[in-house]
Image (cartoon, rainbow over all chains, first blue to last red; front, side):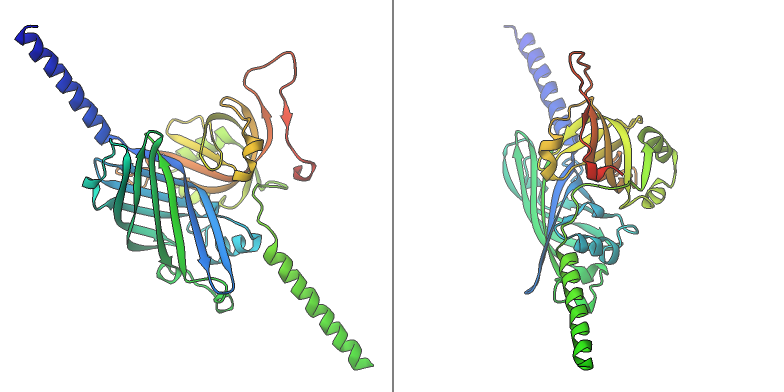
Length: 187
Length: 173
């Protein structure tokens, strides 16, 4: 094979690799069926609700991450608790979604193109009940053939977001709510 | 004797209140929309009007938590833990997601892309891009607690009817 041919093939391979890399870094990974669970636990009561309609998008190249949770999508066991949650505490008709916009602080450690599980530190702004707060949490990003799996667990305080729990329910509903996130994203 | 009657009456009402409170507290939440819907809509017309409405998010707020009945064609089936049917909206960049509770996986599992369905769902949210940098760039109507009322398959089979009426007698408005 002549030197010229080798150079041509090398150039083609380089261009292909470059374009593939560009495409993989410019991609936005998305889902609209992510899962969020929350748990409120006091000595007398425990409430659990899940939501499987969470929209999530991540742009690795821009290091942007976005979550949008339809509040009315939380499914409780108790009908009364679900009604109170939407009408009295979260005021869902006024604030229909919870939003998070943030970034992965250690984005350099997460290889989106290579299968594996990577720890991720996430920082951003969480808006719930019309109140925005800075949050800092950790989780994992698992890169699999089936997609990107995001997992995180953290706690928020109802009082931080202006969610008022009446004195009569203070024994049943905890101010600190545990949130578990589990979402599978794909291109 | 008179005092005894009063005490028994008070005790009776007290026990009734306790029983009622206990029933309401433990009454399970519905996983699908039942009963008479709050609205009956033509999905394509509804989407078209929301798509052209500059204040669609405000308009949609009136529907949140309300039940709506409509016909639609399934364009995609998605979801891992629970089933979500993406429905044809008639508008590019405007998606409609109808989510079913995980307990309805068997009932909805037979639905195929291209099927025509009659659904009754609760309106959960209308996601609109907030700015040009928004990663969630599509308009997305999220419907939840969906109830599959009727389904007809996309490929007609002349040998037998494919009408599957899954309306339970209780759910007929």
